[in-house]
Length: 137
Image (cartoon, rainbow, N blue to C red; front, top):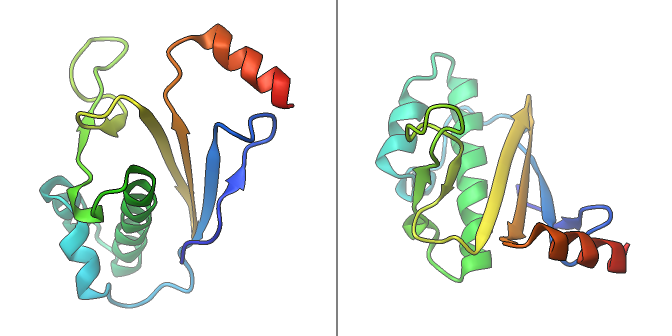
């Protein structure tokens, strides 16, 4: 399911990306997948009407947890998420982020039978990021 990470163009030491195959869809998720999900993920998974869509949702979230757990050196079931403040209204319904960890950022995207996960260290100084990117690119 999860392969070797690739490096994002122009930032080889900063961003790791994974393409995760969600195909062929299995008809039922292995039981251990559910053990890794938190209550919100489990509830969202239960709202999918089509079983194949539910399986893909669970698979991509399990993949995200496995990747982040390896990067953070923790058990996948202990990876905790929260919602960032919305940039427009400030309410806590923005993009997902790691709870109590501001040193790593991630992105999860999917389409059909493929998910993409990107993980990068947080860089507080945008100018420093540009300098490092130019230096390695």
